[in-house]
Length: 271
Image (cartoon, rainbow, N blue to C red; front, side, top):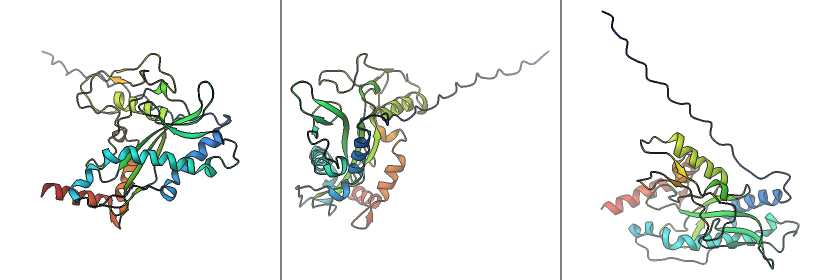
């Protein structure tokens, strides 16, 4: 009597290669401006200034500041970028252009020139703040914009910030995380479908007619078929920001690493 050998399970399908980084064509007339804007963004910690001053905050309450101050910080980053024109427009060739914040539309910020018709847009920035002492140890921003709505030059910029005296003072900005918006969108979908472990469907429904610089009513967000935890779009959980987040946790506030401040605040909340 022959003994049947156990069948070998079929091999798992090979994971496709991750998407390549997307950037504008170096022959684009404004490629140099695009690079210099990133230099200006990296210079934010030196030039950022806020008139906001906070006092009398109890230690356990400081972690609630992210929501009320987030939009203010982002507005002040835009103002700082306009003050740094000497960096991104050293020859004064773009005097008619400025950074403009737009509400409830992707991207948050446009480098543009007003015209009698449609504005002349060079590129956009999806700009978000990250309060370093928020309860979550990573940016909780959810970036759901579909890749087709991102121009090659558009950027996703996340600016860490904290108060100058930890529990009081004025906001200070730190070196931001910068990545191409389309690069982030394509990798987010790749991670959702091919990297993370899930028993649910990994399908993603993309809008049909998405294009860069959409109207407020246009549908530009990708929608996963299954997302019971509401985690789709959390860029901080894709691996793209791992090194950046780790470096910011080691950064010091008044000489003490951010990680230790977070442990202290957690102790306060539990006492």
